[in-house]
Image (cartoon, rainbow, N blue to C red):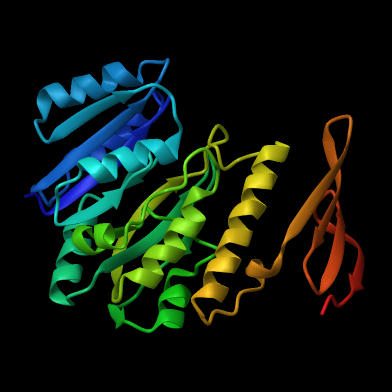
Length: 291
């Protein structure tokens, strides 16, 4: 059994895939398995995967027709055999000691989740730390876990590793066929997995990729986002999770366009409605009560 199973969904990322894979295969922690799910790529991604697999027997390639990132990750979870599970998106990369530091912290602190920092990297621009830890912090307090991970704002799955047995015992998988599937997923792992430790001086590098599914303009993206938010709101209420983020309260969002350009965005929750011109300039705010 490997120490960590690393799950990488791959779909049409030939431009970035080599950088991603190089950061994984050259990890200082050698006892890893690398599960790459080629999700029906139509570019050279499949050839690049095979190129790396021919040189590194730790890489396992799973081919499937295009079913989306959630389905790919779920297949990876079912195939994983490591002590811990980690995720990497195929257009991102990680520090070379990323998994060694996370694994050692999880073992030393007997934690179910180990969490690293995040650096957002812009094309041709300076990078920015989204999340940074300066010391090890171990907690089993529910609210503290959400605060340390800055969830829901940074509801990302890939800057963490998860104890596989506890992960599977909680029966946590991604909802398939939607965007923002990681939002509810992260809520569940923080709720069901008791102890979390933060790990300083190590980062996951998130590429601000204009072609990524999270850079959206379609109504479907907005609909999926607020569907996910509502599910998270229901989850924290049902399980009496005490968190204080306003983000949970936005229940509806409408975008009004002229010639395809978003002009007016109206956001509504159970307490107020706010409108923004071009998404930035406040137009009006109305307070109301529904109960």
